[in-house]
Length: 304
Ligand SMILES: [Zn+2]
Image (cartoon, helix red, strand yellow):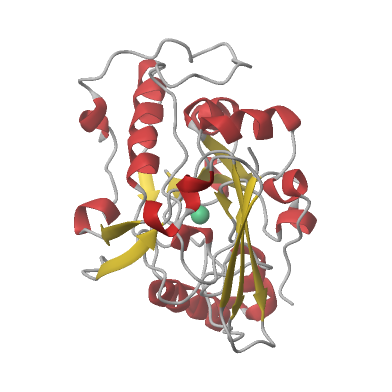
C-alpha cells in the first residue's frame, strides 16, 4: 500500500521574506491558479527534495503497491483554485455561523479524546488538498513549510477549504464552552509575507525578526493550512481560549505548531495562537506523541 512520489526539483535559492507575524491578514489575491492535482491517497508518502544545484526538474513516481492507478497520469485531475477574498477575510468574533446548521459535536469539550474520529464523525477532518506542484515537500501527506523547507513564490493556494471548515467546527465547539476564538490571520501570499518580514527586519533587525517572523517562501501561512487566532501576541497565552485550543485543536485536525520551549527545534518562539491543519488522521498521533511536527517527522528547521 505504500506509494511514493519522489519529486526532485531545482529551485533557485530564493531568500525573501515571510512570516508568521502579527499583522492581521494578507492581501486578497484575485489570481486564478490552475494546477494539476494528483489523486494522492492517504497511504501515499510523497517526498519532494529540493536541490539548489540542479537546473532540471525531474519527477519520479515510485509505486510499490497494487493500487497504482491512483497516482497515474490518468488519475490526475485538473484543479482550479481561486483564492477568493472571502477565503482570506478575517472572521470576526462569533463568525462561525457557516457551521451552525451542522450537528453538535459528538465528542469534544472537556474530556480529551484519544481516538481519532472516523469519516462519519462530526469532527472528522480529512486530509487537505494535496498539490502536485514543483518545489513542495510532503511527508505522509503533510505539506512542510519551515526554515529548511520552502515554498515556491508562485504557490498561492488561498486558505484551504477543509481547513477553514474544520476551523468553524472548532470555533463552534469552543463557543459551546463560552470561549471566543476567531480567525485573525489565515492565508498569506509570498509577496505579503515579504512585506511583513521586511517591516520586522527594519524595526528589530534580521536576527530578532527571524525568531518570530518567516522569510517569504518559508511561512506556513503560505500553505493555506495555518491560522492565527485571536490576539496575535503573548497576551493570548494562558487565556482560557489558549488553553482550550492547545488541548482540543487536534480533535478538529489541527496541531499547535510552535509550542513553548521548542524554539531550537521549530525555529520559532512559542506561538500560542498559531495552529496548523493536518487532518485528524495526523493530528491525533502527533498530539499524542507530544512532539513538534519537526520531531515527529525527524526533520530540521533552520535557514541553510
Ligand atoms: Zn501564524
